[in-house]
Image (cartoon, rainbow, N blue to C red; front, side, top):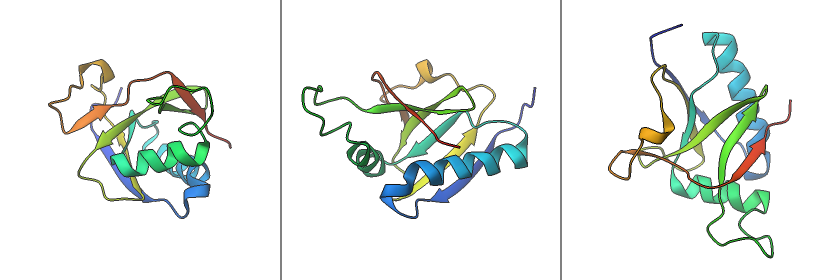
Length: 123
């Protein structure tokens, strides 16, 4: 198992193609590093726009605080994480061999999104 951290930053070309952009970036990451990212970081606004475009934040009968929490790629769950240091319409793929989502706290720069929804990327 690789003990190094790897990270790559990517731009979202258009809000409506966020899933395709993310899926393509994960393919490139896997090809380059031979591993899937441990998590996907973006700022709160970027996450909220993804929630909006998927309809998760506007669907009738859904709780107001429902958020996407994972992206599924090749049957693997990749956590969505907030990172206040990343600008809008940008996301970072990070491989961290020691990443444990349950260890992130509100005092961390990076915070895990806690809810029940999952988004499946399309190949």
